[in-house]
Length: 436
Ligand SMILES: [Zn+2]
Image 1 (cartoon, helix red, strand yellow):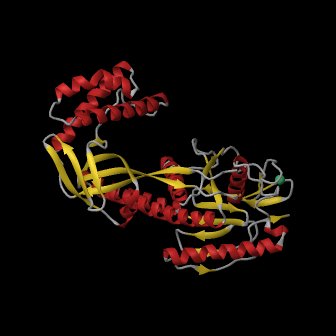
Image 2 (image 1 turned 90 degrees about the vertical axis):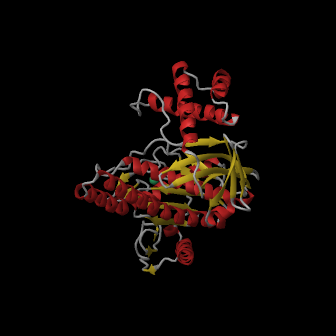
Image 3 (image 1 turned 45 degrees about the vertical axis):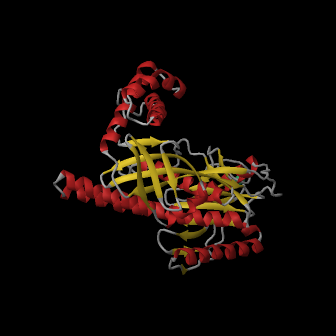
């Protein structure tokens, strides 16, 4: 059982600076990092300590005008770039022969920059003194005022210079008495609680297909390479933002549920892509992988900020085994699965249910039943409770996110979780489970 403890939450925030940083600083830094990369690569050095002890003094002499900590962070950056290069190489995921820094990025440590979030200013040490910039910020940045400041990265982009800062905060974790299981799918995110299931429709596939078609039209219609690249990038950003927006909304709802039920959140450990997802050839599988991970990260930090623990469970066969008796399930129609013991349920329900069970097991929480979440159809009272609960979820969503929710309820449909479409505005409640 989880006891009271604290956890560190880390978030990276991005600020745009109100001025320019001399591009020669970026070029010098890139040259240093690449020199370090060459050296590390030729000698197989992955240790920061060793790289620093062998190259620091030489580089200090070569670049005497540079504040010394630039060399220090260049060693850190070279090490981490080289390490990830080796990892990619081992997995056969890169064709390049040696690691190389191409972007205009400078890593800053606490000696090289000083942040003042009261005045929204930053001072950065440069070769000829210190530069002060105003931080262009939004409402989002307000929350970091009482956070601890960690490392930062100075990034030069075509539209200006950005400062990415890592903030951290210690959060006291709540004592959880239950677990909710969260199953991330291509088109929906399904949540299993002790009172039933909630299904958040994300319509991700529809969004992705629409943008895929848009991009293909651009590919064929626009001749100029530069214009094409610009417009394609714009649509990529838009697609990403639309999906992220949905993720944030769903994650907020799930955290609200977890707080209300004092539950930890269980997620599948997605180190490997699961076999049950069929990627259409035209849509890029990498996007889905990005999506899963991104959603989990968003949910994890939102949960932790609220003191809700997040646990990752083994994803093996979460959608193939019966959560009641453990037997292998067989297909029963397109979206449903059935078991010899009589259980018939939606695939997503099974997935989230098993994830919840594994979460309960790993936290050693005994909810006093071998059949959690209690099947509403075995007990009409619970069934009603579940429907009420689901409509509450919908209402919260309406007021929080300004959705136009039509409450078309289909109480009679069995085996389906309550549906909550974030992507569109369709909301549908139904009894979650049925035992034949
Ligand atoms: Zn069974």
